[in-house]
Image (tube, rainbow, N blue to C red):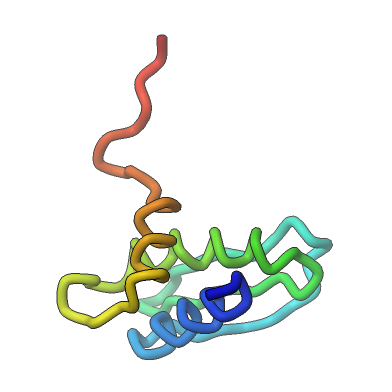
Length: 94
């Protein structure tokens, strides 16, 4: 699967889990998940690369979707694991 197909799959996962998707021009460095008033919105920066948007989307999926309860194709699951933000165990300073 290429990055564009992975991104589309991830966006569908978000939509299926009550996350609204909005596409806005944000200068190529914006986008991401925003939560407010019991709503979640994932902003897609139309000026950002597909790769950058896919990484932000993977982090949003990891944060909002219970991946134990939905089937995710292996290529996308690998991408999610690779880009998971470890909130429970942040990296330690040396």
